[in-house]
Length: 322
Image (tube, rainbow, N blue to C red; front, side, top):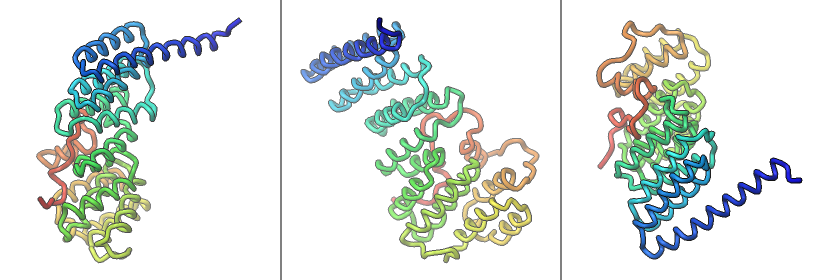
């Protein structure tokens, strides 16, 4: 007599076989140019599968359909991509690497300037953290960052790297960003900003990795420490101080390097936050930062609403060359 587990496996195999047969028919319609008819059939099948709680089949069919439509440059691909997300949102599917990779693949196939892409990434990030309003799963952020890096959209790539755990990838992107868009005099500012922001996010490990990798790989930075740029020496000392946690060391360090820290008005704002997180400095009387600088900090640290798409902290980026 067949066991329950064996019965489930047989049922799953039959379902997948059915999906494959349906996919074959739909693919034939698309290849003949019957895009509208095929799109409507995909939608009909999606809602049928969902009503039967066949969430995996629905998701897999929409993913294959979306990639097929993308290969024919059809706008219907974005609609099917949204249905992939809907299948995840309406089921108890757990976050897994293969699902995140599929979402990142769909993101990479979308027109970078389309509003659908912004809506897609916002929903994908929200789903990846259980719809809790947090900033999104680090793995998904890393995959998005790599796609944006390939598109040379460095500022948004940097934003997603900051919310990943890939300090090495972030550093390599920043080297390219600095070399292609920045002034030679700003090579230190690219990595200083990233380190300070990683520390504001309490990601000390990635802060250290991005600094060591960037300073080793950047062609305009001589081997250190110590470095020829005072700001790099400050960041190096700061990372050591964070490990030690001594407030007096942190205070003296910030005082000694004020000339370098005045190069960007955001630096002292970040350092105020770092002082609170790692050195026991009491927060300012105001519970939240105000003005433009406050908006940037609150956005960085996820205060308030979750990001609507992929707004990076472009206002505080080092100057770019056109």
